[in-house]
Amino acid sequence: AQSVTQLGSHVSVSEGALVLLRCNYSSSVPPYLFWYVQYPNQGLQLLLKYTSAATLVKGINGFEAEFKKSETSFHLTKPSAHMSDAAEYFCAVMLFSGGYNKLIFGAGTRLAVHP
Amino acid sequence: KAGVTQTPRYLIKTRGQQVTLSCSPISGHRSVSWYQQTPGQGLQFLFEYFSETQRNKGNFPGRFSGRQFSNSRSEMNVSTLELGDSALYLCASSLGQGDTQYFGPGTRLTVL
Image 1 (cartoon, rainbow over the protein chains, first blue to last red):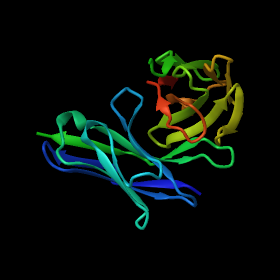
Image 2: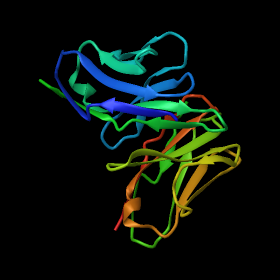
Image 3: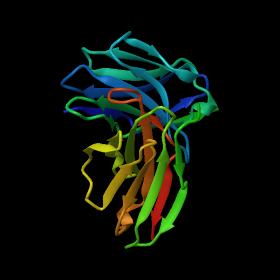
Image 4: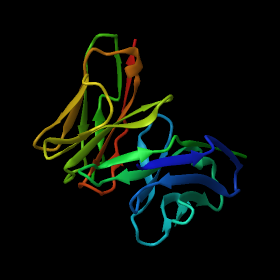
């Protein structure tokens, strides 16, 4: 069965510092993986996705993630945090076999950026 | 291209009432999925519709139902509301199975 674990429910970084949000997945088939961001009182915005092409995926707002099959990980990084990056981030795996078409989400990581 | 829209954005209901939420997908998208987001349970899949047919459903009681119209717009209905139904309800649309899901802004339901 597919599942997603996000390590760290809260991460705090200084403005300009590296952002690293961790995501590990469990999947019996090659996964499709996604990162979404949610700002207060808003829906989910797609940051980036992995669908079995290049293992290093670049997304919007300077974010990128690397798919590592051996580590079953899909960590999200950004070299330099900006105040506007403060939000909640969700990693998700897509289940689309057997007639399904749904996202299974991790619990989320709230990112705080301080001056 | 316009994004996914959801109406209303906010709702306040009392226990025992019923509620209907609406979702208009991105033009050309035929799949609409619904998710419930709560602080305790996180984001959970409710159901998915494709071409007016419910293809699969999450682990929710029968009080939660939905439908999809021929123009791909979707509604979800919750009957006999309970306090625990207070949540952000998110709708997502996609071209079909395995395609990226794009989310609307959500409907915040508060049950008193």
